[in-house]
Structures are given as C-alpha cells and as structure tokens.
Amino acid sequence: MRLAGKVAIVTGSSRGIGKAIALAYAREGAKVAVVARSEAPGRLPGTIYQTAEEIQALGGEALPIRCDVTDEEQVRGMVAQVLQRWGRIDVLVNNAGVTLRTPIVETETRHWDLIMRVNLRGPFLCCKYVLPTMMQQRQGSIINITSRAGERVVPGGVHYGVSKAGLNMFTLGLAEEVRRYNIAVNALDPGLIKTEGAVLTRPKDFDWSEYEPPEAMGPSAVWLALQTAQTFTGRIVKRAEFGRTWP
Image 1 (cartoon, rainbow, N blue to C red):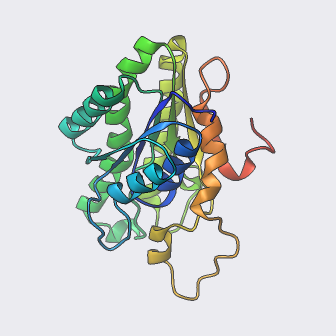
Image 2 (cartoon, helix red, strand yellow; image 1 turned 90 degrees about the vertical axis):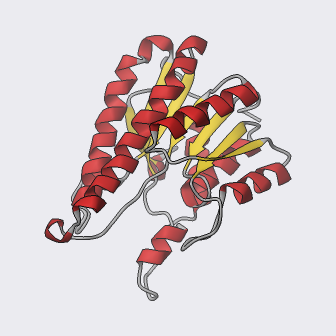
C-alpha cells in the first residue's frame, strides 16, 4: 500500500490507460478522483462510474467527476470537489487526450484546435488549479502522459505530434518552476498499448503481438507518483524502459 493516505486525480480515466492507472493507484491505497467526460458509454466502452465502481470493489475510495479538461470553470470545480472531499491532492495524472490520423492538408481547423485544446490546454488548466495545493503541501507529483509522436514523425500525425512535443516542453519547464516546492513533474510515454481507442482505429487484421495491455502502465505510473523534486523530476521517460534504463 505504497500510496496509502494519498489523493490522486487521473484525467481520462473512464477507460484505457487512465483507467488502468486509476486502478493501480487504488490497489496501492490511494483515494482516486476518476475524471473524464464519459458518463454513459458511447462509441467506446467505459464510464467514470464504472471505473469508480471497480475501485470500490477493490476496497478503495473513488470520486467520479464529469469534467471537460478544456473548460476552465469545470476544471476549477473538479479540483474544488476533490479538496472538499479529501482535503489534499498528492498526484495529478494528465492522461486525457485525443488523436487523429490525417495529412495536414486534409485536417479540418476545428480538429487541429481540438487536439491542441485537449492535449495542451487540458494539462495546463489541471496543473494551474492543482498546483496551489501541492505548493502549500510542499510536495506532490504531476505525470503527463506523452507519446513517441512528440519525439519523432508519425505519418498522418503531425498535429498530434506537435501537441505531445509541446507537452514535453511544458513538463520540462514546469518541473523547474516548481522544483523549490518539492513537486515532481515528469512525462511518461506509454509506448505500444492496446486500448479501446487503438482497436477502433486499426484494421481488423492488425497485428497486436508487440502491444501490451493497459495494465502494463501500473508499475511505472505508481513509481512516478511516489517521487518528489528531490528524487526524480524533469524527465521524459518511456514505460517500456522502466526498470532497465530508469529510474
């Protein structure tokens, strides 16, 4: 129970990577705010309530909160709800994100704007409203879920790559800004993970042999949640290298 007594916010945790991280934190004793827009199943399965129910079935505490991370008032309200319920925030995982596979010339401007709002404005807003509490506590850990697309060109994914490259720089810069408050800020690249969203965008005969299930995110996400600025911060790390090249 390495996270016993800690409170974690995980955005985009109704399914996939976010849900896996939320469950991993609950198994380690954390109280988890399950944050996403999904209150009912849509094109993809999973809701904030289902994730919360699974956490509760494990004997953990969960608070499902519907929140659009691009909406400043909703983010402000979400953070206020967490503080009202538990009185502290120790971990923030900025996992909510969107992607698209289209050449730039075929990309609609509204889709470009959506990717930038969710993948960059979302983490900015969540950090903006969580940080005052962490700064007062003089301890905390922020984990931004990034992608290999932020470091190399993915065909049809220039817009997504730009957003993740921006998130990487946001991670490095913010780590320096809050270092004196003993707050760790790191970016975690999941690598090849077979999520519901990934399945939806791949052909039926796609080869998944090199992909890991979302549960593979658990060990590295838990370890990062335990860090402070004194131990491990300002790093962009790959989940697949956890235990080998890092920590």
